Image (cartoon, rainbow over all chains, first blue to last red; front, side, top):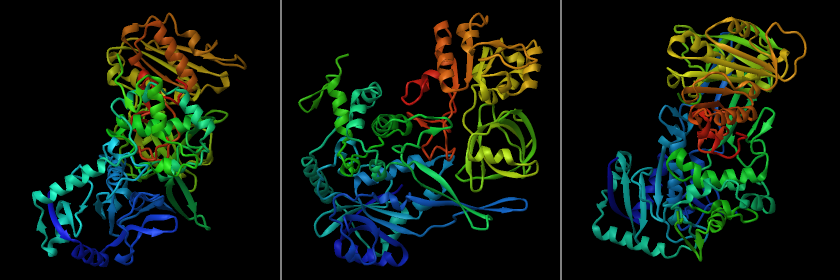
Length: 358
Length: 275
């Protein structure tokens, strides 16, 4: 996809956003009860781009917590199924690097060739994504370790990618849609100087991280420790089975399906809603439950995000945002569990991971 | 195929198998060809009840839109299917899944081991092997059920038992009641030695309760069969069939997309199975 980089004065950037509001629904971080949240922006003044971490990631506007799949009506000759044909056009404003990566992860899950999720594709195609590099590092964040931040490297997944340069934004663009949208601003092309300033800001952020995890041999280490005591200890002593971790995780894609029938029994609305592997019912089959213990469910969450996801999708399922541990009522931290496993293998001492001797 | 992609099928005929299991023949209302391979499955559904993943128990007939599912009453969807009368309709999505490793079995001995309703997904594989009999070497079917009354496909079992092309061993946990079939008493694992198969060159396909597949696979490996040529068909509840809903995941695998048939070592390495 075509890549370009411009410099846009903040004043013209925000009036441009206001203009976009005529054509698109604007969605961005704004202060809500309990903290910043990606919500509908009625006025640009509502926008708070100097935010840290939202509880729910911006992806909830692409993959909604609950959504209709289709309606089914019984006719004489069979079933008439209607699916959604269009969705509103929207702009997601100020998406941080980790959350841009989360969207790329969802793309891999929902846009597999030959097996696309229709609703997700519709929302994705009709959404303009404006990424924004974080101004500072949050205390729970370990995106640098996961390779998902602090700055966003892939040249995919966004329309615009902003870096705050004070009075202006370094504005990287991908694709023709982005170029068309800003064409009338006649923006100046970015120069090497702007990119140097961007690199400098990135380096400054790298020094601020308080949290890290060594991913070098993480997959093998976790897979060969599926019966490690850390799973049952953490699950039995601390896990409340509240499912918060999966609710706030921006890469969790699992859903359940429900049918709602009209009162006269002629029309059925089939919808899906986000489900959680931490729920007891999740791995139930007739006559058995393959994850009937909290230990099994906690292990599933952690080993999926940090290990099996890699074989499944070619990337980690964890983007290092730290939401799961932030909204865990007992502060269960998946990096702690990984470190404890490494330590028991003698691979982790005094804050560093050693290579396995053999 | 995107989700959703529904078709309408009409129930043509019901063949009772046991007290809680019947074989249902359907035909697609659009009259289109339905191609599927042994081991694949459909999502069958009814508005209001949702959908259930069910294996084909018939062989795909080119140019035909007919197919058979052998279904045990177990939940909402299967309970409502049991109440369908010929001429009534349901919704179908599929076929899904990879199916049995038919190509890999060419030129090999084939051992089929089924337990209970697990014979349903094995049946089309056996029919396929009989149809292409000259492409394979020895063919053995071991089928176990709890009681003679719980044995499905009684007519097929009698036919296969009389055929020279396939060696059959039928066993039950408890010999009770009458049966026209020669039945042995014991678990399938009691009858797996001395089959005269080429250990290094046998493809074994197993379908049944997970705990049974565990002991069958381990028995075969101890005898010297090659572990990567032992295949199991996994069962997980699924909502979509298109590797999105996540319910059927085992480790890095989606049972609906990467399975339901897996080579034993490929799926056994993950947690949360009893393999």
